[in-house]
Image 1: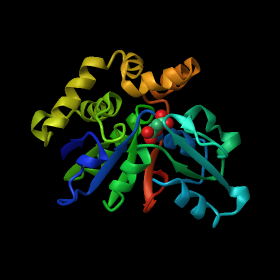
Image 2: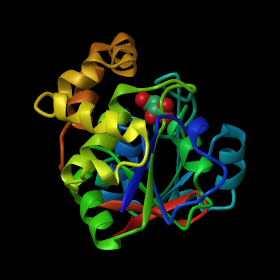
Image 3: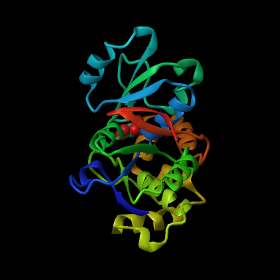
Length: 242
Ligand code: MLT
């Protein structure tokens, strides 16, 4: 298997499509997606734009849908849920379709939705993702970070590095400089993932919005808490797979 890492959706090439791509948004979209599916949500359907989300959700029975949105780290007014994974409890989300839009994570999913196998990864479901990739033995895999509005984010690249580390990748399996740097970044911080999230610019942004968001950071840093692989089953729709 050969791995390429892209820091942001903007860096993803438009040609040379691989067999598999992994979307990563540790803070917090892919952590939330894994949490929602592990808690029994029917599926998570992602949208880059809030208006498209509202229109599509109207075609779903009201009792079976939840609208979830985040902009700038804050919940979207009038929606049922924001993007805190701690709010996605079984009582709240079981059997529901979650219509989700976030600042960056849902854009990266949209960028790779044409790739044959699309899954999402976060630190909370790292082991399940590593197991899925090992069993899939894909020739080429793209690890796509979400970043923040087009810029690099520490936590997504560390998660890409965690995947490479736990797969036991050798240097000749790393297809670009970004993958080499991701592996080194994870290996530097692997014993203090919560410290890395607190240090990251989006971690700082969330803490600036309220110290209670430290609970989200602690949850998002909790390696292997969930055994679930969110997998795209239709463009933009993720369900439990593996
Ligand atoms: C994003 O998509 O930018 C994030 O998930 C933001 C967040 O809710 O922390």
